[in-house]
Length: 594
Image (tube, rainbow, N blue to C red; front, side, top):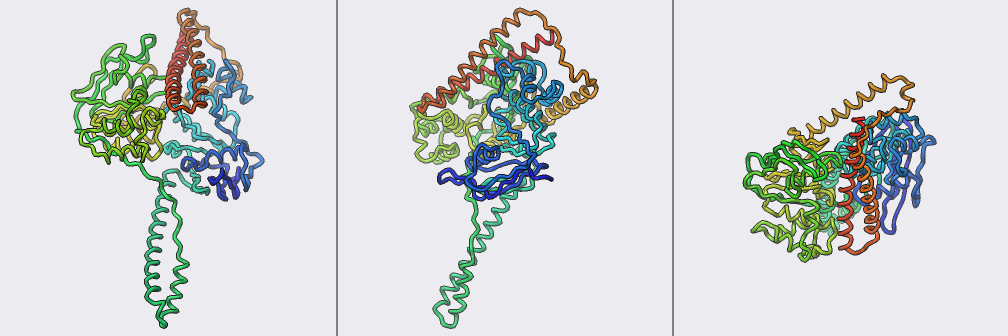
């Protein structure tokens, strides 16, 4: 076991904020480490130090002479018009067959591999970057929140990649499910100190809780002992016969010290809406076709969700999750078929088009009072507002001055105070901290109504979902067994794909591996080519508009303008992903019919 990197007596501060205080840790060549700590603790700063992008105030980082770091890049490393395959060859210097083999591990094939990488969605571009990482053959991977904005299937592929990766990793993540699946050690950064725990994140959190409970019991015993000693000293210090004993007890009292326990931040507590449980189907989709006048997304949908279910809608980015959700709540009309809600269903919707149209003249408190069920006390309203981070005077803020994230939390708080017996939630955890997401999960578990939701947070999904509905390849499938059944199906599919790839490569002669791939001739379909040309212009326009809006968003200080630009970027991202997905479908269609 070789030591790849060692952090010795590291100190780092920004003004009065101390991030590292004589911190020490060792990274070996045979461990995968999950790096955890509260937001702002200094995890990203330490990563920059390890990469050599920042200096310590004092202390040192020693590195093995053969250390080769691989870092998942957040910036765009691609050249204009470059394909994923061409990028992998250029970036790694590896032969074509090797690049194709590694790309296959991330399901990069067809036009996802040979088409312009700039046209791929963010999740697919991340797959390309991960393949490039592997091709560089590093012996230490540094990953900073690698699952952010990745769809579930890409997250699972990343898990498979890391489990098969034979070298060391240091992974910063808040995703407990991901860390449990990939890391066998846990590194904690708290109050400037680094603690390495030889176990997974769940075991570490249990250990941490037990340690705090032990210290609390120890402190309670010390406090009791102190009181006994103080009572004895007070009674006996004035008597000549017991003065010596009193002095002795005083010295004992001085030696009694309380253990320092990290103060815990306030924990959010959310109560679920109180509704009557119901039986039978809440909603039925019968021979449903969803999409837009110019493009069909999925057809032949026959899905039923029962009352009391908590159904999560999943699927790769661009496959149509939001389209399906919008059709179910009637904000988008079906192309064919019907969506039929059960008798007595009262539907509350949390989605972007809802929380961007809140009454701007209302204060937070006024909005919540209006939407709360009859008889709700002001204190309960304030409690829910506080759980959504509106504490003290913040409840008197007018909605007009709230950011997009704050408006989202106001909308969610209004739903939680309502009497809706069906909640439709599109990424409800996006604007909430970890503790509040955990409280929301518990509230939805306690809720007696029906929940239909989307999320990228697998820990949240696993806790809440009782069934999984996947939108993929023009079909919608209900995995009635819940998250575990869906996870098993996806893992099996990925494992089967890996075995098929390994078999195919083992049978291929060496000359064939090194020979450039020959492409089948494509049919000359003018209509498809015309649509592709039009789409490329649309994608380029959307991309330019998104970059311009992002640039303006970073520069503006006006709350109303920030909200408008935030909404514009979100809308453009959605439109861009849909256009990119259609472009890939058309390219695949041309290739298959060639």
